[in-house]
Length: 152
Length: 295
Image 1 (spheres, rainbow over the protein chains, first blue to last red):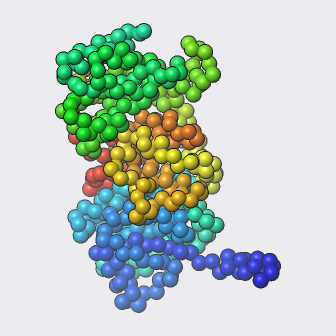
Image 2 (image 1 turned 30 degrees about the horizontal axis):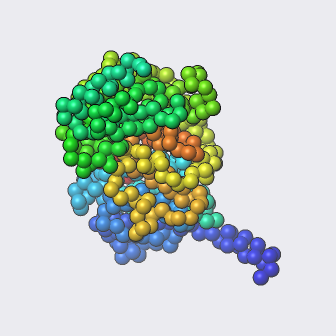
Image 3 (image 1 turned 60 degrees about the vertical axis):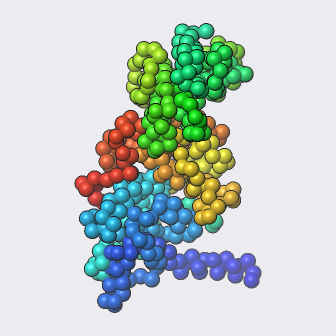
């Protein structure tokens, strides 16, 4: 391929860019919520990759940084509503941890919109659809994430 | 020899000769007039090595981690910041209180050894940055206090100004600033090794499986390391400033630690680490009425 062709190819791929979004979904609520969204035939953008975790409290800050390193454009941590945690208190710890984490990312120069947390229960299929759609729109507006990436 | 040193040696001699302790952790005069490295004393005749001057920077509490299997009791000299480190280690179940004899030394603020390089002994040396905003110069935990407590300094530290400056920047400017800082990091782990809050038996940066931290020398891995460290010590950092002091590349690490501590205070109420053994670290417990932003 000539240099021009490579450049044209690159430009085209940038034009057709679609965000990659990683959703950490708690097994007991959000994963069931996503399942319900699917069963109810609710349309949501295919940009999300759902990763099932036993509890939103399982999500380590390293998971989030690693995701950004490896080319994810936005991260959503989703779990049970406060009071509904399968393990009684996991999501309360999540809430504290990620309030701090979001501010740290902001201080490091990341856009805080790229990292979000939401409570989505097993019966909230439509909420899952709506949150994911909104997040995808937000990330699309922000463009590809170049920060914290391990390669360009 | 100053009065402080005399008092230190007196007490150390008494403790060692009476057999109350079998080891004393203190500071000695190094090869250079502006260096006072740690010294480990187990014989009475060696107490003459002990000194206290304005270059006793090392936090001796972290050395207790290497001495957990020491059979006898250990006497350790602590400044205000070091005493909070003792509390940190006690709270993390790393050391046992009954094996310690803690000797409090109220700290008048130390001098910056980097500024003394190349100067003649006795020359004017500027104050250490980490002591500029110290809110706890007086030990918070001790068995004996060697001399009178000192007044608390309340001036605004340069690090606060740096945080304010960074807060006023756009995200891209902030990112550019931290890129410049972290790109210098050589991942020597001095910041981790000196940190009393970094007391895991196996650090995630050393683990081969999963290999959290890559071996590649690039900015991304440096950012990963520094951000992970900030999160791991969040709410547990005692703000002793040792990480920044030992950093060979002069990365302003305390700006991150102070910023996180301030965020935590804003979100969950004041919870300075290493003061109260009964109070759990802010990220280690929760309140039902914590701020709710994630609905």
